[in-house]
Image 1 (spheres, helix red, strand yellow):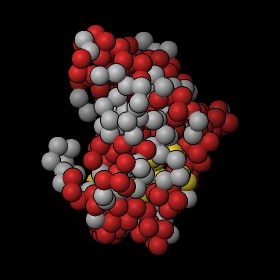
Image 2 (cartoon, one colour):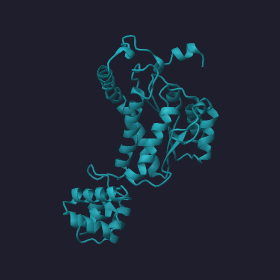
Image 3 (tube, one colour):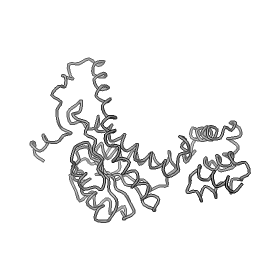
Image 4 (tube, one colour):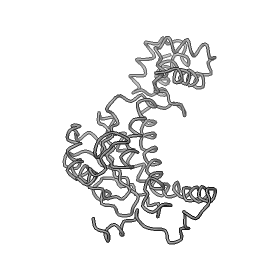
Length: 305
């Protein structure tokens, strides 16, 4: 890419009204950045219809046995890694259900940034993961034109997988390659071209919605409680107990005892406490029949009563 092409990138545009940052005080810089960041949620709000469409596609794919792949490079890739890494502890997802594929490797700090220029790298990495027509590929690139991400989306289309593009420009290349394009143009960055700032925040908000709303639709949230979380340490065990208490109104000692009876399974503990006639085994079977939804399992249990 030559200098003239770089100048045309929306994400590289310089704000003509920007102050001389290096002459400002720390307090003024902090206020200026805070003000700039306030615009990001509004820009994301303009793309809600596209986010809804993407979530519906992801939910359908996962229900059909598919997987979700985030593909990106640099900051965009690391945001995909973060979102993928957080799904198992937050929502109890099995290993491999949500995966991140990053140009140059999976290390948060040591990825090879030059790998983003290899379009074939994106296709090769997805092929190595055994991408299938049941899967969904979400390509993430602030500039909307990263070759690695474009290559991944082209390969996904060849395979027959569903595709989503997340960018921060109008009419992006990756958007044209995807079934659903989520484009959130946030304008010039506080530091020109530093897309880890407003663009990164926008991408993080979008990925939050994609994964969280998907998991809610899949029955991993009851009310606003993350009932599929895995209590793998002391802090998380205490959180699991509080969730059971809030969901059922049980006293702490009762919630703790029921969790021990269910082997730490939060959903089963909730169903047992809300339908006292059930034992842990029957509650677990009802949850399986209900596709993991606590609310549906409760409905089935009350129908039986």
